[in-house]
Amino acid sequence: MNDFADWLSPILVKELRQGMRARAFMTIFLCIQFFMIVCVLVSLSSEASSRDSVAGLFWTIIGIAILFLMPLRGLATLNGEMKGNTLELMMLTQLSAWRITAGKWLALTVQTLLLVCAVLPYVVLRYFLGGVNLVDDLTVLGWMLIGSALVTAGAVGISPFMQSVIGRVGMGFGFIFMPYALLIFIVDGMRGMHGGGTVSPSMTTWLLAAALLGPLLVLEFFELGVGKIAPAAENHGTRKRLIAVVLFAIAAILGRTMHEPGLMLTLASIAVAPICLGALLEETAVVPRIYRPFVRWRFIGRLVGRALYPGWASGLLFFLLFAVAFFWLADIKWNDKSQFFKFVAAVEGIFVPLALIRFFLRRRKKILPIYFGVQVLLFVTAIILSANFNNSDPNIVWTGFLPTIGFFVDIWRNGSGDQMLVFSLVLTLVSLLGLFVLSLKEWRTVTEMEREAVDLK
Image (tube, rainbow, N blue to C red; front, side, top):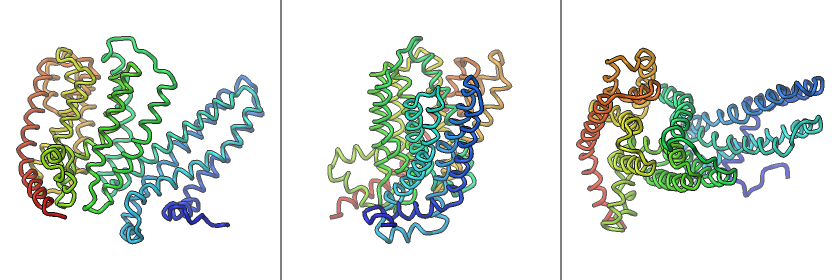
């Protein structure tokens, strides 16, 4: 009766036993108890007019613990197993890579839930002190728990990519840059894509969006981590792309319902960006069994596989289809120079570094750390150049030749010139042409795998 039930996942039991005894969890748990007691004592001794500032401190402490410190522990989950060479031993127990990843996420989420339960008495005590809506506080706490579960899934998903120094820098850059980019896209989308006024969606619509997109985001993060630790014979590249398609389609429908198509599509694009970039960077699968489900359907299966096969050659087509869908559904106008340039510059910033790496480092198998390193370098260069250029400077047009930089110059300097647009467009088309030529060798490998897959029983 004092042990975990037999029907629980063994990986969940293992992680809970280790996690709840870990120094990190005990430190967070004891610190939040201490600060909660301090906040309550300060509230008791202060006047009603000054309790708002105490309430801000109260929720700040809870938010840091639930939304930052607990999810941060997920970065060491799969990464720690890979460093300790224990993944193979765990898989010998018939635990799949997916169950291992899900178990580690669930263990961290349960520990966060325990932390939330430990905070509940203080939330109720604040209600008896007066001036607090208990239902609103419990709602905020519930949303924090949901947000923590989502952020934890992201941390567990990117955990296998934290092996190298460049990978850590790239992922750290992503954590810093993504919220900023998200804010820019939201503000810019609400200002420009709809020509002015917007209709505020109801809370019911947002709840529906969270209920539909939240589980898909968790699945996406799971697949990012699972695809890194799973055996080569498992096809996780196709699963990730199908998740991206479903997520993007639901976001497009919700955008029409909310009367915010540009905003929802932009948020969905940021959400599926890891899958699209992963598709451009993954190596071609050389296991015939992976291609067997596609070749069964003959021509239709092979045609669909051209965008869903694991490998960067098909990933190139998948990304282009995704970009065309975004261009069409977001209703980007050809004659709107600002919108069109942002779209071209964003695509340029993705393809140009990839083309250079593929051309000069053809024999390099793992290019993900290098790609992230190049993107970090371009981002820093963009900040430096955009800070020194002004709209009247004639040299600003040459930033169109520098991937990523033109995009931020256009945003921060309120517009780009025709020459900048032409430079970015030409460079993007040249990069795409080069990638298509380089992908011919990959397609020959894919064709050979399809022939061998036909002979499999």
